[in-house]
Image (cartoon, rainbow, N blue to C red; front, side, top):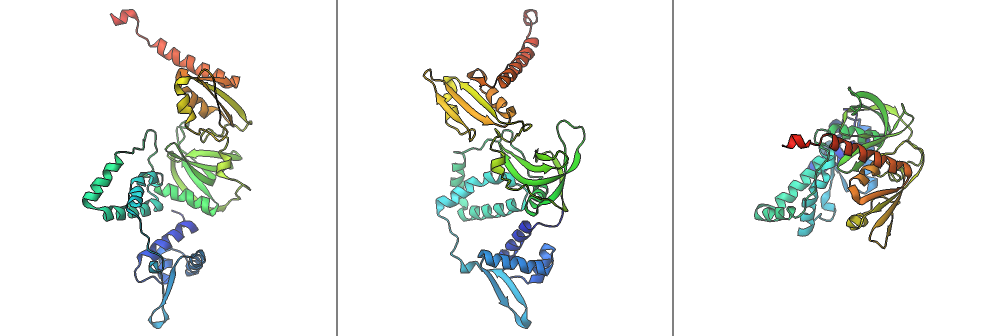
Length: 337
């Protein structure tokens, strides 16, 4: 694994300063994080400026030890319902499975379990049966901890990352350089957003097919004013399309599904118009139609594309191919006798 980023290194330092009852010397902290003592001293100054309760103790022969003095801060306590809510929400942390942050979260959840304990824990677990987070299609990142850490380091330090990616279209994994800009969690999966020098543009990579990631020493210039939220504003998910411009999409939904459609915010540009016959017309301004096409098809006969004509034609073609597949495989009367 490449040298730790400032963010990851400082996280390790905070964890160490919190765990060591009698504190640590700068030399010990430097050995813990595999950096110079000068770097550690800079990090300690950063913590002090950020308001962390660092305590410096001068031991015999002038030796200095550092620790986080949590006694100087108000006790971190939770009411019973707050502790239960945090415990029940632990599954929401699963996208970080295998990472440094996941390990810390698990330690915190173990403490909550210990606090509840025995019969109280059994009682609390009954609440878990009232809520269920579906995992259909959700990614498993338990074995991607090191890869996610490398990607986060590249994002934080603005360093080029070499990724080995196995796409669905290729027979073999390919390794190339990426300028990582951020991670997006969408419908149970993590995606890397980054600049691809090879294509001279921003691309998205699903994290699951990334077989290896390695941070290099080569810095990159982050696009001026780049913002993940703004970047994805025209996507109906994470797909960006070919960048040919904005597409206005207009869909009529049958009365049977209007309530379901109207209860959710599907896209920031969404505009809904209820009709007298009980139907609903939804309009969107998007950068591509690939993902919304799949969404529209999921409603079957209850959704009809009104605009654009090109998307309407794609839906018709998709339905004709689907019908053909079923008709071609339909048993003959003779086969049924």
